[in-house]
Amino acid sequence: MNQVSSSPSVLISIDGEMSVFTIRDIATRLLEPLSNGVGMEIDLTGVTEIDSAGLQLMIAVKKMASDHELPLRFVGHSSSVIRILDLCDLVGFFGDPVFIQRGAVS
Image 1 (cartoon, rainbow, N blue to C red):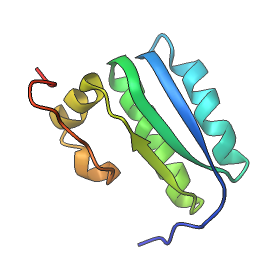
Image 2: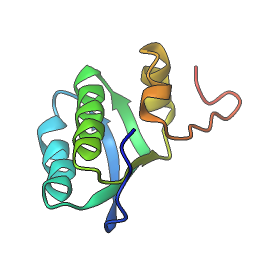
Image 3: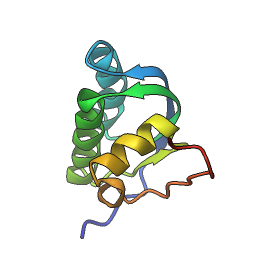
């Protein structure tokens, strides 16, 4: 188990699609702070659609943060994000609290 350092963190919000069509721009926004030794809190409230490319980026960012012992949390999971995490049985992998409101996931 890696101990997370107490280095500074930034909040990054993602809005719209996290898909193969938008992933390059999102990856740049997420990988830059990590490569500079800065942890993150990533707000997924505004994610309207996510595909396997978006999920792969989430996994890669989580692994990179862990490898560099930087804090990283995903917060505000939209129903689209919850759906794909549940479908792929990855909620536990990320270790972030996921709050499901009744009727929010269909």
